[in-house]
Amino acid sequence: MTYTSNTTGSYRTFVSHLECSYTAKHYPAGVVHNLSEAGYPLLVRYDLDALAEHLQPDQLRSRASDLWRYREFLPVTRAENIVSLGEITTPLIQLTGVRGLSAASSLLVKDEGRLPTGSFKARGITAAISMAKELGITRVAMPTNGNAGAALSAYATRAGMQSFVFCPADTPEVNIAETALQGAKVFRVNGLINDCGRLVGEGKATAGWFDVSTLKEPYRIEGKKTMGLELAEQLGWRVPDVIFYPTGGGTGLIGMWKAFDELERIGWIGPKRPRMVAVQAEGCAPIVRAFEQDSEHAELWQNAHTVAAGIRVPAAIGDFLILRAVRESGGFAMAVSDDAIDAARAEVAESDGLLLCPEGAATFAAYRKALDQDLVDGGDEVVLFNCATGLKYPMPAAGKSLDRHAPIDYRAITER
Ligand SMILES: *Cc1c(COP(=O)(O)O)cnc(C)c1O
Image (tube, rainbow, N blue to C red; front, side, top):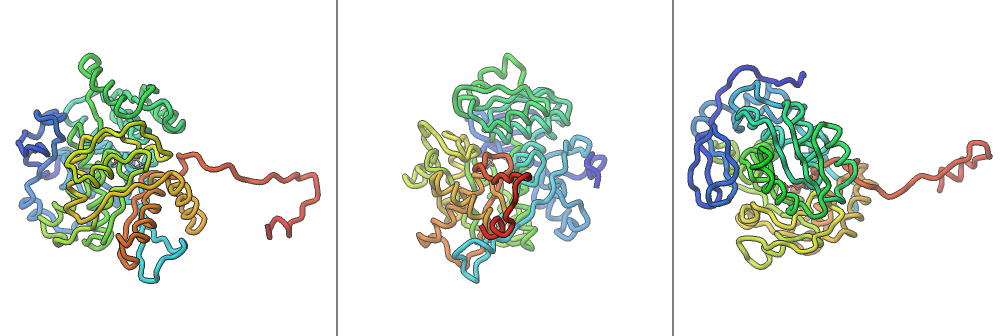
């Protein structure tokens, strides 16, 4: 497989228009957009009847095992605009070693850490940058907690664009370094991601940046939507009982919800939906609070803090879309403590050999808590999302020293 692009020339695409996610007002495709006039995210709409007529699930079998196999569900119209670094299909890994699982349980981790730049931010950014290229954009900017900025930097460079990335000063060091090395100009800001977002909004007119913030342009969500398409395909065109999703801006959760809707409309899956569970950290849980208070929108979370940097998002512009999907699905929102996240990360690593990122570990901690509270059943088929490689995050110090000049008691070190 070569990753210049896996298709050539133009192919049939099905975008009909864009639609304000709040007011349902229509906007034309093929021109540059950020938010709707009402200030809400725009969603891409497709001619699904035509898509259903054009494409059968069997036709996907002969295609490369990557995100662009779903090109008819995506907005890019010409293959040469696809900016790819090899967005492979990510595996579903069954957890079998962790304690207390019932024999009937099916607990699967969708390991998104295998994607380019080590996180599922690559899905959204490959779509957004490909569309930016198609629309003639040359300079992009975004606020980030780390992983999105790294992906933006990589894909922008690949597309020959300049990129500008603003992150909280305490963003994991590796994210800042990889972002810089891949070509972006990266700035540490003494604030949180929403403060960084404000700087992008303030500077974009003067600096000529296109704002690629989560849900402030219409295409990142289309890339993230492929998680739902891929999951359904991996399960044989059906959905699991429950999905636990580490929720920051919520693009992935909203995107999967959109994917399941589109799949049902073209008849590839039935009306069953997974219960969608939005997982947050106790130190930053605006969606959980809004869910519990029955609110349509979430209020800004003050003094946000958590080890799970990717979900430290005090305010999400798509809050109402997250809450809508969670409620319509019969799911719930749940916060877990940083201690529970650390313990969950250690447990899955030690018992199943799978190193989760803290955000992914949060979903396992939430699964345990939900089992205890009878919110899920031991026999449910559950998918946890691990959205980045665990290798990007700090780990506890480990390793004992050996003096190769002194006698070594090999039996003792083996039994210890
Ligand atoms: C960005 C990120 C999330 C949150 O994703 P959203 O779809 O924006 O809610 C979760 N985990 C990791 C590792 C991330 O980088």
